[in-house]
View: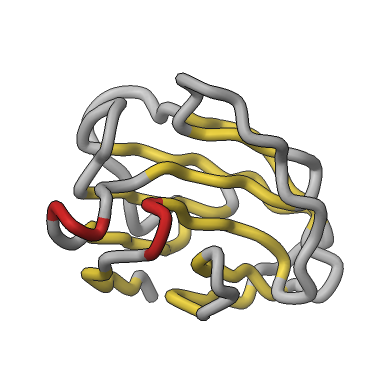
Length: 122
């Protein structure tokens, strides 16, 4: 079942990974989404500007109009998918069925999005 939260994460940054963590991608200027084979980082609305709505769910349950801004895979050896902050605070979590999980991300806009949808699987 899909879940949605509204948060103002520090550093305007979210991470998507296996629940055991992984190797975060290096910062690249003007790239709002970065990834390694274990972690995806996603820029969001700066906390001083308000909250970001974040939705996590199976690909059959969530999405936005148009193509995703990210479509890739990450390793999920514990079969636990986690969305967290730079302070390692858990925002959302889901059990996934495989050791490698397809992730698709939609955002409300390219810079400082205030709505992020994360679909796993499919």
